[in-house]
Image 1 (tube, rainbow, N blue to C red):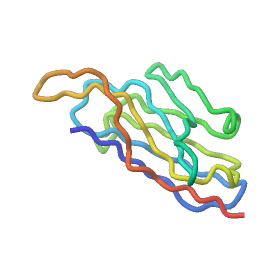
Image 2: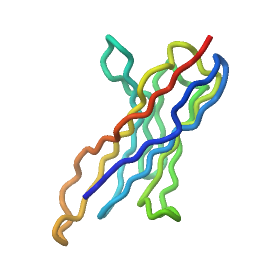
Image 3: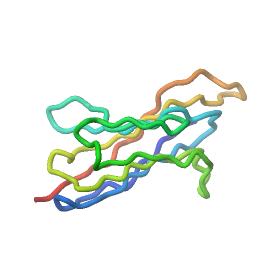
Length: 130
């Protein structure tokens, strides 16, 4: 069973910073590209940033120069197979929303390595105060 667990959301003033964390737990053969999306009321979920296993990154134009995505590419002390981060600086009102982590993962099911599939986290809310 694979689970993505996000944390780090909260309330911050305009111009402030937050770091979101996404941990991948479970019986996993590999974690490929990891993504951060965000959703605001009335809008579709939008891609914020992505990072490949070789750590190539992409960013939405709205966050370039302010957000940084990174990943560990190793097993953490709490047995997360991989962890992605989203460092968010100079936060603006329009950055508020629920942030979701997605990862492309090859799970191990009944001792077999299965094909890659998308897994989503539960979301973490970011509020930006004036």
